[in-house]
Image (cartoon, rainbow, N blue to C red; front, side, top):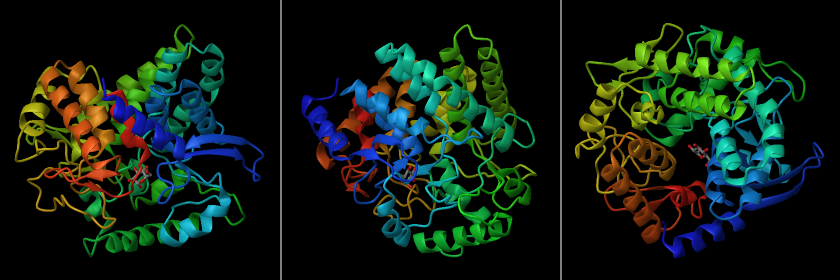
Length: 416
Ligand code: GLC
């Protein structure tokens, strides 16, 4: 159980960051928690799913509203956007400071790790709300089918991302070579990202609101990554969707898809020699042999073979030279020459510890029987929040809070 003061502090953040109203551009009501009022004032896809899960411990009505709002942004073809600009008046200032890919114009028509079915399942379990579930199922099925149809062009079970921010771990060093980073800073990253978008620009149809064809973009093979973390979360989401569907005939379709994705992770991304999972770059599927937090993420799949689980845990998670820092688990192992534990100045996901990945992995380790490890990760995560507040990420040695303040998904400690 988290300390009562953590619950009070989390409630304050989730209430302060709550945005409610009716969007003039589509006439729809919205009610969601933004990741940070100052840095991230809109609705982000996976943040929103994390907020809903944390809200289950505080306010189940708002947890449901959060996901209903996200689902209401689903597009006719099935896509649920990465970022929805509900409050358009804040967009110009945001876009002056941030590069957003494929803006269309009220949302960013890219993806983020597809955890939504799992979040819906958690809300259904907590509330028993059948009407919510029945309303959620059609857009969820359309979304996971869209991912398969559009994002898995070689039909191997692994979906591909077309720009680094789609994985949620934007500047991870695993993308450096593929992006051709010339300078290891945030401005170097933005410069490289701009080149990717420039190469996509000719494929963009002209006319407000028209979206590019993701299949054509992937066929360009400019930034085509079958990402381990995205696919682990995809398989987890597919399984949740299959469970939500229960006896319905579609259930088998999504469980079969989950098995296919898990098998592809094992057959194509697992590297026996290194003892880690690696992303596949390009249509040619070159393994990207860089270990990051993402290499551990298949642990969220309950039927990963035991020898693989043991290897990940013994070789990486519990090794002080890699991920077992005083405040585990850093986004990049300490052994990596590019490991940046302190203030990254926007060049994120290259060292600090994040609460969302600790949430995924502590739950996974607990389910795999590593209770002590899971308890330690939970205790250290709570300690981070108690001593440094709900920050975006933390120094893995000192626990210093870094990045945005009053950051929404760090309230996931309530669910750990
Ligand atoms: C950063 C993170 C991304 C997150 C977003 C909003 O871009 O890398 O994962 O969704 O901020 O919090």
